[in-house]
Image (cartoon, rainbow, N blue to C red; front, top):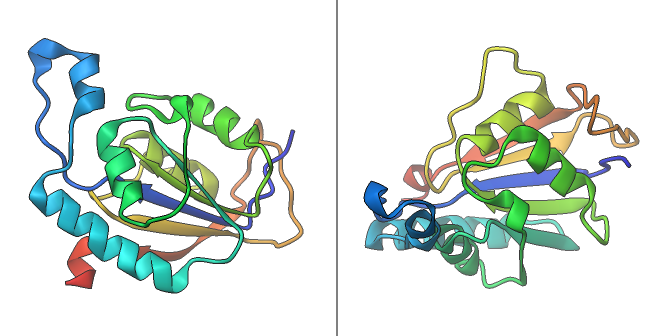
Length: 170
């Protein structure tokens, strides 16, 4: 299998309620956006609506806060169980590789730290994971339009097209 995505747009969920550690993973999946988080999601969605490429597929973590962030875009959302909080980089790469139907333009709404690990991996950043702020968008583009690379070896084949944060929007 290969990943042949020209535009890979990564959107970290906006600010969410604090987790109740005592309640565990189920509580973490049910955390909702705060009023500030809803505002962040709306600001970023407005920017995305002006700039997204055509024929885009949107996939989101099944966590409520990620779904609510994606919902602000008013676009068809495909929930993907592998994009859960705490997923590791290999799980994410396999999920992206196996998306059906394959799409050249993919928007993923997810979580730290795997979003930062994915960006670092795809751009060949060897200094560790990248910190992606809540509500921020990192838009990566294939460095070579005709390149199609295997996710198991995935060399640095992407470059940063733009990074946008809610703070830049208003």
